[in-house]
Amino acid sequence: MPEVEIGRVSDFFAHPVVAGIELTAPLKQGDKIHIVGHTTDMEMTIDSMQIDNVTVQQAKKGDAIGLKVKDRVRKGDTVFKIT
Image 1 (cartoon, rainbow, N blue to C red):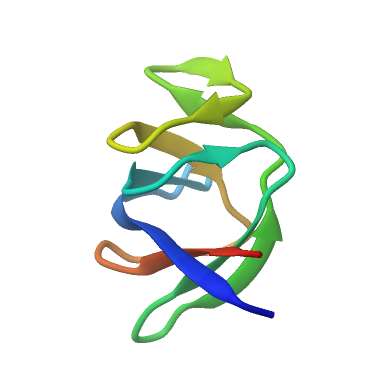
Image 2: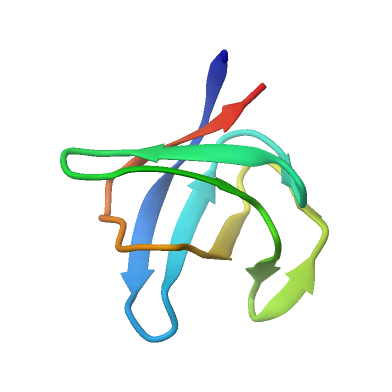
């Protein structure tokens, strides 16, 4: 499946397991993403995302979002949207 780069991981929090992501393209709930890095390779569907601790349905280019992730991700990992 084709993938389009939409951002980078800027932060990671272990409890709860949340990734901070700086977006370079829009993203909405229900989108499938692929996070790739040196030791990271994870695909997931966006169930919920937050901006400044407020749940949102969609985010635009330039937003910094928080996403619950299944496993550890690392700062600098690339985020792709699966189209």
